[in-house]
Image (cartoon, rainbow, N blue to C red):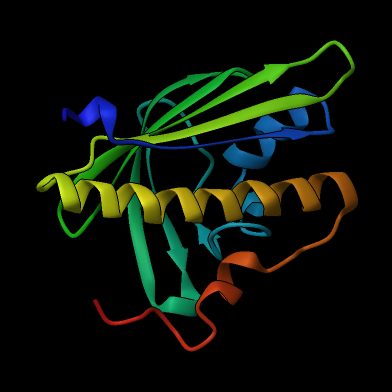
Length: 156
């Protein structure tokens, strides 16, 4: 297997216009309502930001590799020295809704480690999309990410 074969991918329709959905992922004031607890700045091409999950005492640096407004985001992030890419694709639909696809790829390690990382990432990004959908469509914060591990991150 190569890296392209092992990736996390989640997709969902969000019943809001593409500009609003895209903004929710580039503006940390909005993103912090459904994913991380704090972001150091807006996503801009070539810029690095820090995302904090204060409830877990965890932070991650993200480097924005590409932005196509209302269409695509490409971010490289790293945990424990191993970086992966996250790509968001936003597809505007004729009825004013947006189809969002998130792919996390470039996992490191042997085949089992890559598969485990892809499974964990798929779970996490499914929570992110579900939380974004609830917030953007109904102005409800589901707290999916903080409630995933109510007693803190498990020891690996």
